[in-house]
Image (cartoon, rainbow, N blue to C red):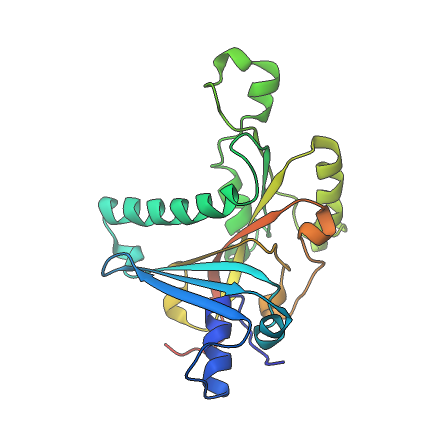
Length: 242
């Protein structure tokens, strides 16, 4: 297997195709590209069998990569359109695994004290949680609101506990129907830093992109679907193609 040093399925696919001088698609992988506008592009990669898994080192499932040019200098309208694109892709994946009323647990992975790893914990502060409101103050909750809870479990180095072990306890006690995990990713291109979003329905292996692999967080380990949202915050200088 290649030493990809990237978490992005779209990048791994291109690395494999280039290395093997493939003009056609990799066996076991389906892909499509959609240009939303001059700044927003969506790449969808679906791994369908073990051959595809082996080729790019990712489990079977759907991987959606949204690339947003000039995001750092974008105006309010451009930012909103980018957010709507990400929301639409996320909604499609969630709806394929859980119904409109299914409870969701949002998990912010990473270390709040390390800047490139702080994405997950910081996002959790902006999640609109409803689980406690639905349980204790239902009269103040809009009808049809989804049951949402959120947590940032920290990292092994500060808790001494594997993240998946913490999440198993939470899942067993609160019974969500689906997990959304948010984490920082590694990329091979500096242009993708804070400008790309990857959404997948295969869970996540924290630290895999920087060779600090932890136990996977997935349906295999937790018993419920796991949707992962990641944004590149680090890049491998030796493979940087920018």
